[in-house]
Image 1 (cartoon, helix red, strand yellow):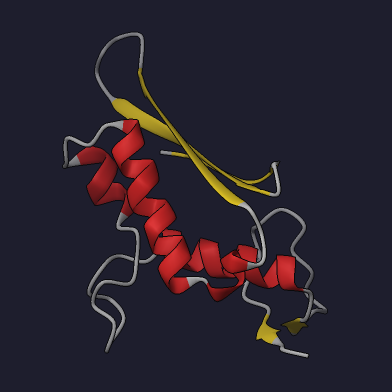
Image 2 (cartoon, one colour):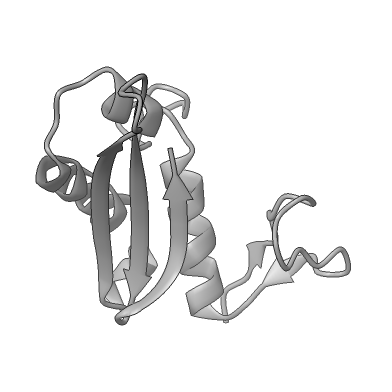
Length: 121
């Protein structure tokens, strides 16, 4: 049985201050994906390609939603070993605010067709 350190932020929904480790594979996968999504490339020594660099990809590049989905899915399949045991899906939708002043994106991660992670940028 493998164990991962429980690394959820105290401000996060369903944070458990009494938990020190995670042993179920789904929770481990979700923690791996969250770590990957919030890491920028070149921040991990020895693995300069690890990380989704989401803010850079969303706000400073000209990717389509499909290209960004593909890039994130590739990162997950490369750096999250437990993704091989589950059906992980990535959905990106870009949006523009009514006043046209800012653009953003909605990122959903599904595991076995259930939405587990959603981020609004």
